[in-house]
Image (tube, rainbow, N blue to C red):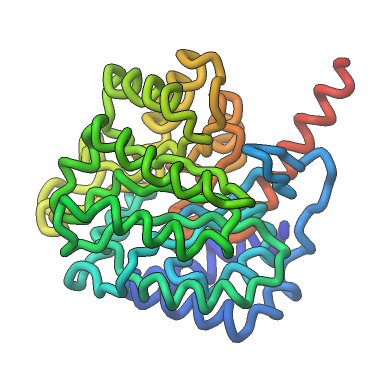
Length: 353
């Protein structure tokens, strides 16, 4: 890994970054799918250590480093991603029907900021296609199902879209995430309304309670919420007894970016991820964790590009973390670096005791 990390950043990444981000995404997918065995030659065996294991919402994770939703939208690569060393993979966002998403170009790198802006718009092959792929699950990695609504679904049918996905994926995933905070799907106001969220969570939980094997349900929130809204989220979790929260999704805020304003204007709308949202995401984790007295598990995501970034999220109160933009910028060696750092800290704490 010591050799692979510099090679990724000095040789592989500059080549990949010369091409359109979405084309690179498809190329990476086909390489991992068809030549996944090569990763075993270039990358060391993933670290397996009891001290990395985490038990969260009744599930045992082999390590706390997961892949965030949006990368493996159609549940195509979870086995191969597991081989890279991830402790869990979140598929989706899955919607009931297949949809093309927003027109291209819709994925943009902000190299000066270590970020990405996307307005993919929940492009995915739909629920049935995801189920077919998940039937080939070898059971070696925990899989989360991130679910949402189709773009053309009318407000009175939003809940039904979530229920259809929940019902369909229930036998095949280990936990669920209700994605109510993506800025790239139309008519979003209702999904950010606490009253509606209460209704949605209650409806999903009602179906869950009819199952013999109930699955944990989490809510994914935006980084653009203020403290009053976060207080409402804490109250909502307390009231609905939802199993946890994912902090956070992408941001519509563009403050403090190094990328010139004219470039941002040309890019237009979309959700910002990566280094620019790291501090806000970590501050939200700390606020929710401290204010609730660690009453519920938090999956921390947003701007993790180093082991230090990961430790900050965990120390702020996250039980698990997820990578996305950092995985693209830093390469798969980042997973190992984080896990090594966690072990180093565990060893240090053990010595103190």
